[in-house]
Image (cartoon, rainbow, N blue to C red; front, top):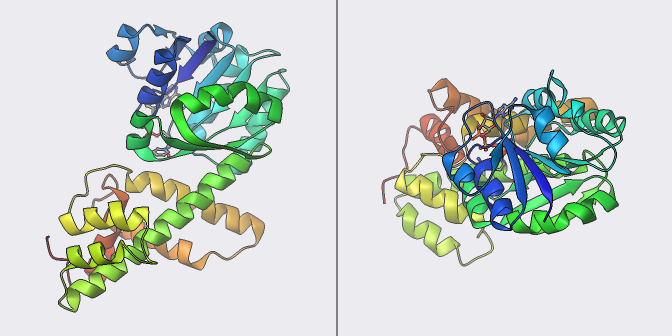
Length: 295
Ligand code: NAD
């Protein structure tokens, strides 16, 4: 049994924290919002600050929305940095900036503790089913210590490299997901406008070279017009901003990523910030003057 901490108990953090509790660990939790009852009933203790969590825990997990939130959790007054010391490990599982992550890791290391960036892929479904893909950056010793805990939350756990490399991997993942949503949207729109049944086209393609999880899951959402999130467009905009900011810093062109971001921006302009990211197809439909028929 380990003394663990978990900060950020939203869509993802709540079930992930639940798996750590279910594995029999002592868990101290904190959120700016009230801590979910199910975690308290399962034995978690609520702490009033990140500092309190860090003082009571050997390993502190963080799962908050974006870079400024991680910065606040770590370094605001009463933050995690005030409660860490040598031997402790801070594990940020949020999807945030790789460049900021390197700075956060240095500042935590300066207090004697280790830092791992460990963003995830797999969504709410993967968080609940403990089947997340977890991409980790940081020192191997710390990774080996935390690996059995990662395996309580995910199935495919990889140490990619040093601090920041986990976040870089997640940005790469989000580029692939956005561009594949765009490709699936264009293909189903084309098929529909040409008079074919998009539901059957999707089904036929699932057996061939164009098959993918995105064609399966997001393609079905497009056909059934189910744009309840899932993964919100505003979170994907955040991730593509990380890609495009990184590209600018690296002197690199990512033309299709920039276009996908513009399509998300068009959705947001139509009031769709909180739509599921498969709703990117709506921006394509607007430009085409044609909507994929309901299945
Ligand atoms: P969420 O908004 O549902 O949850 C975030 C939680 O963090 C909230 O409970 C919020 O109150 C808390 N929080 C914010 N600032 C805080 C602070 N300073 N101190 C303490 N708690 C604070 O978000 P989510 O969907 O759980 O996503 C979390 C991260 O996981 C994001 O970086 C997201 O990109 C990533 N992610 C999400 C999904 C998904 O499908 N939702 C999939 C993969 C990765």
